[in-house]
Image (cartoon, rainbow, N blue to C red):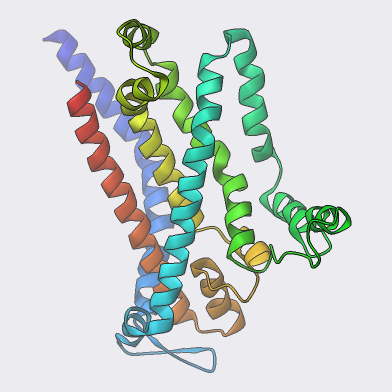
Length: 289
């Protein structure tokens, strides 16, 4: 009884101590979000936000063919980048998990090192590599492999390449944890029973790595949805992307209500992705328990 009372007192003290910080966070987040919701239901005229209530911003974004194409292109790019990160990241994560413990720290640093460099710098680096007069095209042309430079920037190809490189470390680090927890005796038992490498991977390694794969996929997908620098620099103005469209509406066209509505729709999509992730994770944990 005394222990229970003490535990309750400790929890009460913790909540009392955390209340000012939680209240500050709530105010800082809630007030701007409420203001955004209000603005998204307003009209705009020559950069001025007009009073009144209207659904025109959401109706236009959800009903116009151009807006639907914008969403489809953004979600498609995020899905492709997530798939490529999973395909490229799994072997690297498996190699780190199987490496001797004394080398793991160095391998972790190698994976996380790009995160120490600003995204703008990394993206401009890809621009120098993939541009029409970049390193890659110069080598291909001078080597006689192609006659004219390849268009690898200002389009979806550049966006996919740059996005994959930027977000690949997050996928790798998400996959390493479940692979490190993998009981090697399961793999050895399957090997003794005659299972080949592919069957061992499909029946043991992949199912046990699914929680990390889902977590990494949700992280990469949601971050790619909200990416701005990479789509703007490598995708160019000709490529329609949600984050770039929000920037254009807000700071170029001064249509703040439409930009706010678009940002809120993007936020709803990201929250839906995290909700699905939570449900999937709970089901997987229940099956593995």
